[in-house]
Amino acid sequence: MTHIFIIYIATTPLSAEDCFFRFVSDECEVVKSLNSIPNLMNPIQSDPKLKLRPAEFEAMFLPNEMKAVIAFHETLVQKLGEAHVHDVGAVLLHTMHTMAEIFTPYVSKFNSALAAINSAPKVIRTFLAAQFVSLPASPTIISFLRIIFHY
Image 1 (cartoon, rainbow, N blue to C red):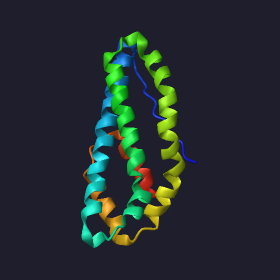
Image 2: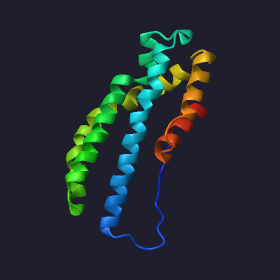
Image 3: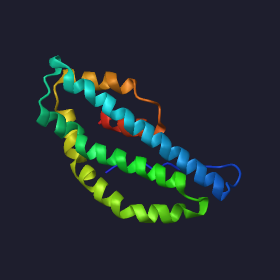
C-alpha cells in the first residue's frame, strides 16, 4: 500500500491563524478539485463509442461514494468557515465519525475500482487519460490521479 504524505516546510514559524487559514485554503482547493471529477465522469457515461454499461461505470468511478466524499468536504469547509481559529480541533473531532462512515465504503471499493479501470478497453483508458489533462491543477488531487493512471 502506498502512503502519500504532504508536509509543509516553513522557513519561519507559522502562527495559529496562518496554519488555520492555510488549512482552510487547502481544503477549499480539495473541494474544487473533487467537484471537477464528476465533470470527468459525465462524458464517459454519454459517449456511445465507449460503450460503458452502468454497472461498469459504477465499478470504475464509485459515483455514489464520490458524491458522499464531496459532500463531506463541502460541509467541512462550511464548518471551518464558521469556526474560530482555536476551534479547528473541535470541528475536526466532531467530523471524525462522519468521515469514517463516508470514507470506509469508498476506500473498501477503491482497489476494485482501480482494477476495473486497468482492465477496461484501451479506448476507455485513452479517453480517461485525455480527460485527466483538463482537471484543475490541485496538487493533492493531481498527485492522487497520477498514481491511479500510473498504476
